[in-house]
Image (cartoon, rainbow, N blue to C red; front, side, top):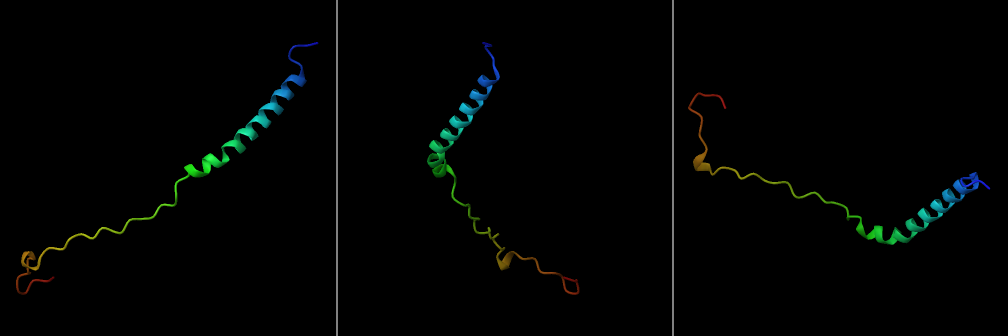
Length: 64
């Protein structure tokens, strides 16, 4: 009897697949609560406008 027969590798692969599926099923509920809710954009920032007394008026005859 050989130590590393083809059956050994196949059994390890089947065991790994079954265990991975089991771990995935066991953690499915826990992972659902960790997912963040959808993000919502903030309101756009409105820059303050200068007061009318600080606005420089153009000279007469100058284009705007």
